[in-house]
Image 1 (spheres, helix red, strand yellow):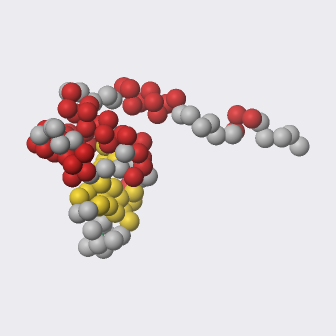
Image 2 (tube, protein in one colour):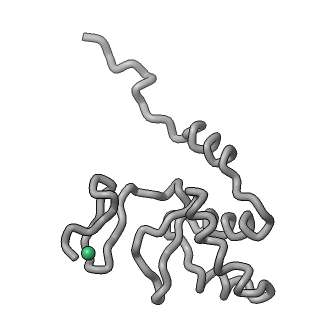
Length: 118
Ligand SMILES: [Zn+2]
């Protein structure tokens, strides 16, 4: 019997992910700024409420519309969970491939993230 070849061991770093991120960089200064805030929040994500509170020197209206623009670009997503009543936003790198419905069900991409229960 042969031992498992070393290349089957998963690498810690994924060059493809960083390449994709660079290829889809957000356009616009504020959009980039908000994207950076969301990216820095890591797997826990952040909310508009938290970003506005953490940046009192920036007009709230400059922040609030950016996440939807970034979502259209496929750079961030809403999983469906909330914190302090606000929807949590995460970068695409932390997309675990499912969404949460308001009814508490886990939605899969198989059903196009549409709830089968409500
Ligand atoms: Zn539902």
